[in-house]
Image (cartoon, rainbow, N blue to C red):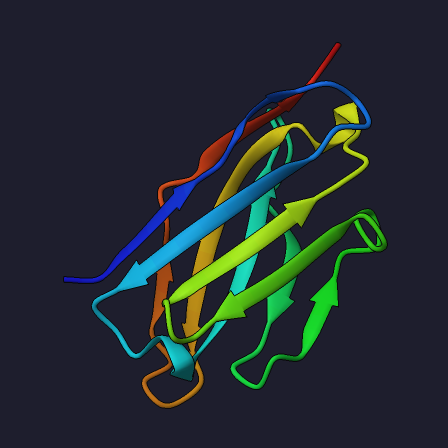
Length: 118
C-alpha cells in the first residue's frame, strides 16, 4: 500500500522556521521525483520545490533562498526546511511523488497546514 505521510506543519510567527517531513512507503522511493506543493485559500495549487532522484533541486521564485528541499533515500523521506517565513507562505503543503519510469505513477500525501501569523 502506497503511503505519503506528511508532518511538521503548524503555527509560526513571521520570520520563524518550520520543517516539513514526508515519509514514503509502498513504492521504490529512489525512482521518484519528490516535490512539495502548497495551496492557499482561494488560490490554485503551486509547486514549491522539487528534488529529482539524482538530487537536483528547483524552487519557486517566491521561496528561493528561504526554503530547502532534501531527501534521504535510505529513510524514504523528503524534507522541506522553511526559514524566514512570511504570512503569504500560509497554505496547506502536500508531498508529491512522480515516477521517473513508465508508467510514471503519481502519488500525493494528505497535506499539512502551515500558518504564518503574529
